[in-house]
Length: 158
Image (cartoon, rainbow, N blue to C red):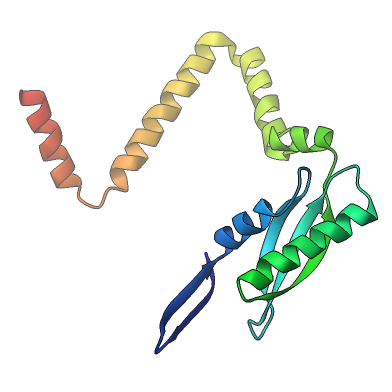
């Protein structure tokens, strides 16, 4: 996504968020990461949000801030830095697997009760009707059904 674009008699300038984040991450030591970048209202100053590692010290943070400011000034921008703490790795792994999602737990509970009440053959029928329902709905939502049917007939005639 482009954060800034300017056009004048010298040409065109496009600045992307991903490009600025990658640029900022090259200046950051291990454990630090640029999470977000934005411009202020008059597009004269970059605001960078940097995540902190679990173990850190204020001297290292000051050095990181100074490095980033020098990096952005080499591009012709002034900058401000905001610090953000990261969650522990344990909770991040659980949430990334979806264990914190109520929808996942609902699907698991429905699956367990379906297996118990219907048995394997009942589950097979439910899955079969689900697939048929999906295919029928996909067909009904096609914009050009006649072309699809013609292509299908041609395929089976071969």
